[in-house]
Image 1 (tube, one colour):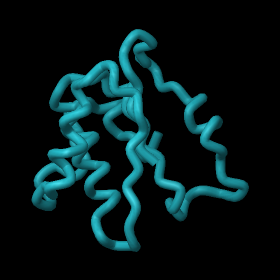
Image 2 (cartoon, helix red, strand yellow; image 1 turned 45 degrees about the horizontal axis):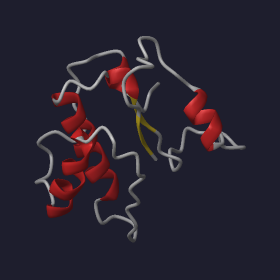
Image 3 (spheres, helix red, strand yellow; image 1 turned 180 degrees about the vertical axis):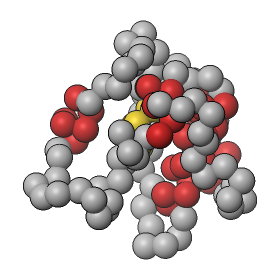
Length: 110
């Protein structure tokens, strides 16, 4: 829940206004509104090049588009607060916050 503060406070927007949006953001943003596009997107790159920032900007965009906030999940496996063994992808996906909308698409960012 700590990594997803918008679940409790709908006014929170991660990554908003902190850094300019990259060109890749526009490419990723195009498919957010397409209901039939269920493909996963993979962003690879070395440390400290802006991958997490890009993900948070995408989350902010989804919140602006009024996607139910409980249907947007962000999970950072490098969070130092996590204890070992780390949760599996299935365990992360099994966590559904209050107000999760089964009829709306779910967006998951790892």
